[in-house]
Amino acid sequence: MPELFVRGSKQVKARGRRDACGTYRRRLACLVSPVFPPRIISNIGRRFVVLLAGILCLPALALPPGGVYEVTLHGAVGDGTTVNTTAIQTAIDACAAGGGGVVSFPPGAFLTGTLYLKNHVHLRVEQGATLLGSTNLADYPVNYCKYVSRSDEYTVRALIWGEGLEDVGITGTGTLDGQGAAFRNRKSDPEELNKANASREKEGRYLLQSRYLDRPCLIRLVSCQRILVENVSLRNSPMWMQHYLDCDFLTLRGINVFNHVSQNNDMVDIDGCRNVVVSDCVGDSDDDALTLKSTGARPTEHVVVTNCILRSHCNAIKMGTESAGGFKDIAISNCAIQRSNAVAAKGHAGRIEGLAGVALELVDGGSLERVSISNLVIEGTTAPIFMRLGNRGKAPKPSDPAPPVGTFRDVSISNVVATGASGTGCAIAGIPGHCLEGVTLSNIHIRFAGGGSPRDLADVPEVEDDYPESRMFGTLPAYGFYFRHVRGLRVQGLELSYDTPDPRPAIVCEDASRLRLQDIQAQAEPGAATQVLLKDTKDALITGCSAMSVEAFVTETGNCEDIRLMNNDTGRAKTERAKR
Image (cartoon, rainbow, N blue to C red):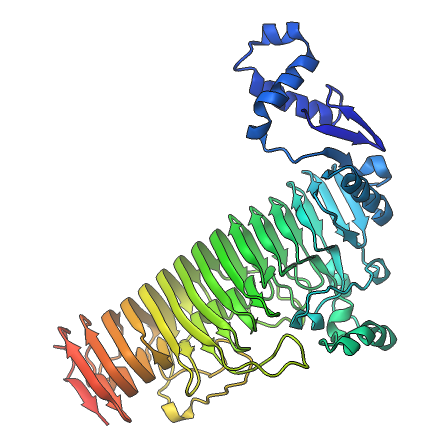
């Protein structure tokens, strides 16, 4: 049957009126007209055409079930100053009571506090419509979720909130604006903070930190299924823009995010979710952009990300920092990562050029495995690639025992072109006794700033429990890649260069085993000590590589065993290998 439109509490069949009904009828008529010529349509009558089109064409239109509930018909006023929380919530509740459908926002600016989504309700923000977050903290009640996780520390408020729901969405070509600048650097009320934490303390959960209490997320959905967020523009959240926690079948498609008004301004945080598709999105954020987390016991798994443009003052693509449940079966492809030219928010966590293009971080236990990342272009980050297995050891509940060191294995990064990287270099590092396993890097071209100085390997600290980021070890001993505590590493088709003369090796491997380096082309300073430095490395094959005019193409130090060099072009080096 044709879609129903709701006026107040009365439903009427779609007819040719000067409202959304007319638009609907015209869309259906356009679909029917190839079958029935205009003369016939005019004779058989509008009602019959709409009914027939509904029977024949609704599957092709993919219209949501139920009616359309326009918020202005429930008392909402789009003047940008009237607080519409009650009116909009009334429309949402009526839509849910009617079996679900669409709550529509026509052109206008609709100011509101927290809205609670309901089952089978989709919010549709039309072109020219803006859903404005109130700047009055009293319009955002404190909410607790049942799912236990370390995110208990971070957020209890949101503009759009939902828990335990199914078939919900936020669509349309309009805008959601959190007006987050109004909440920047707010100091929370100690009495309110104590009240908010009273129940959490009894349950043994993490206590909310004061710096987060007064900053709502724009969207927070917890333990929901079948979520669609499509085509909307999201702007200016006081905190994270979107937090999806313990959700299943999440689709983010065609959204545009700009978040540069406050601290912790992430683009999106996908946390302990399953069956996730992110495609055709554009994000520009002060903090991390596309962020996969696992703050609770459940992993983030079965995730596909493709065709996105990401800009960030921190990490463009990140797994972590929280990793208790782990990350599994994740494919990311066809993304462009660029420097953000937005003015950094006061007190921001990153730096103008960004921290990492890709940051894979496992420091709270869990398992990171079966991850494929391919076809990236990266411009202007401190480190295009950063991987870290550490031991910070934060559990989902403070009363839980600290998790053991996690496992980091079976990761492939391929077909990457990066320019404008800093002189820091790229670190891929585990900790003593816990190696990254089965990492493959292939067909990767990176141009660094260079300009570094030689650094003794003994000067690089382990910092096992430090917060992970691409600068954590300082300027690395290699201008290109520094590999430490790795097993089964394969590097193939790697091309490294720099802008400013740099005497450091292109590659340093420390505590590595089952190492394979093939087809590596790396710039080096004439007379530099070496291009590849190996320390405490066992079972290494280096083949098909080209040496520059250095003292020794490969230098071994420490306890190295079974190092094999085959079919390399080392004619320009003084010697193929050296030991020290």
